[in-house]
Length: 398
Image (tube, rainbow, N blue to C red):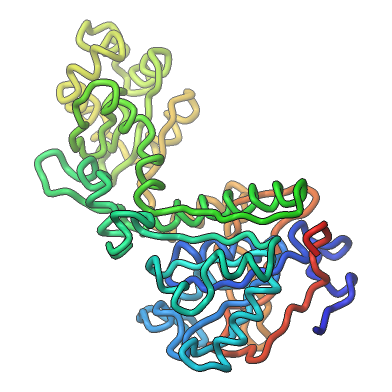
């Protein structure tokens, strides 16, 4: 097996990256799994993406496409990886897939329960050949009664309760504007994998990591789920309002919308002063947060009457200066520019030879071993016959 020298491993220019030597056999596709493996790859893990001859479905989700003609959906979650195309119904392809799984530190898959079993790639079979493997399975609804259910993000947003609390109070249920449940589940997968690798450092043994979309969403409902369990009454849609705080919503100024997020009485007094009507804070309907929540509609009308006198940008500047949380309702381009203006460096560049591609940066900042953006998303089967190219992770499992 070819292995690169330690000084050839992905690094920040001085030291190996934090996950250098961690080998990931990635059988996942679409979003949750690929998002997870991209997070690992950004910190140096060697990720080999094992695709069918037809490729990950998202390769075909176009438009839009980037400058190279690749679907931007696929590109958003597949940088820093290599691609091999294997037909698991072909003995040679299956043998190669099994070899990669048997020599990996991490195997990740998001097929319906039972699919990996049919190919001899289930956890028990991989573990028999590779006791140190951390085997992550991502499902929609677990491996029990929900095993046969298709794990699509929209479906989980519906049955998982998110749509019931999203949208206008007098409108229909609404989904989030991005496949949020998939992303949350991908983050849970990263956390589970890293926890299992940490335990392997202690014992030398791997284990199975299981995450599913429904539990990931239910956990992310946090205060809304907690209130339901405590009171027995599920929350309802409030549009952009908050069930427990006011004013904490979208408001209309003279030209566009802004958000005002008042979290306490001090901030509300400051808001009233900036609006030029300090008497609002003395109105018994708005004296405390409980009062403001009870008289939300009257409060909204009073605030918007005053906001109509100036632009949203004017109010954001004035409120922010007074310590009142406020911001414009940006589109995605404006949001990226806002992050750049704050010095957060939300965009990274990948040198791809003739083309330099821009990508959204990894959100995790490590001071000593930061993420790196080494290679663009691979073409299908670009790395046919690929072998692990990093020194194996050190530990008793090797």
